[in-house]
Length: 378
Figure (cartoon, rainbow, N blue to C red):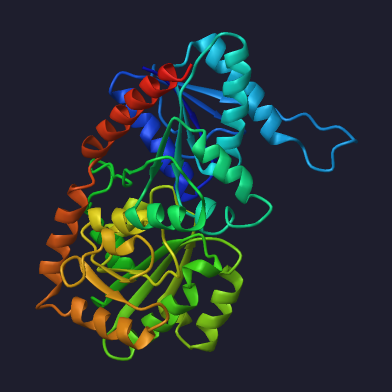
């Protein structure tokens, strides 16, 4: 197939999933055309089946805000028409789904039919999409899509609960490249970080309020009072400076390292013993899946779609949002040398269920169904 993928090109989960999906599709022989305003950060390899098309947004004094949605729709029309795309797959509803609807109508006026598949990733439904400024457009765009997927059953439930959506939503979970995300021999790095054999706890995120990084620090401090431990924080965002101050206030800064954004995050995950995810909401928990693939059990909240990935008592533990005492207790239980090997093995085994080769065929089948539906209503 000739597939167009529209996504945000940033480090966020939806952009990462979209890019990795495109790369996997290309390796399976499909031609994949990325359409976005800059090259996706994970689009870091050469493949003869991968193409990138930049959306140029002209600026004029008249526009206080550049009209990206219109420029995106025009670019979609251009690429579908000239590259003979078989399907448009848009990730994150706002504004990609509405731009795709506009492009589809323009193409229809030219005698061209292209199916649109929309994948919902989380905050496009649970946060941004609920805003009264966007809700009618989000609802309409979902209903006008030829295929709709969500990354977890919980996100599907929320979509039906908050939006008058009539389309069937198929759950296709996020996936993992097990060739990349696996435990590597980084003993020299671990020895430098934890020279006395301390347990290594890790958290990765974009340091926003919903990730509750403050809870990460407080959980770590609770663990550190009982056993020697170090904490590695990977990522950056609006809460970072406040977290650096909090680490000093809690007097644990000597055992906490802020590593910033890292592309090769799997190298850090390879040295960890436990992954912390105390999020207020996660549609799926891609960061946790990456950690599990590197044999790290997860202490997390039971929010959103996390329980669909992290099996309580098997691959890690689940706690209520904000229950730091319970997460400290659970972390100490998992980190006990009598328990840790079992949790590590189970985490890796669970991650293998989400291998890219298990999930990508579900998208291929979704594309075929969307194409049949688009042709039936032409």
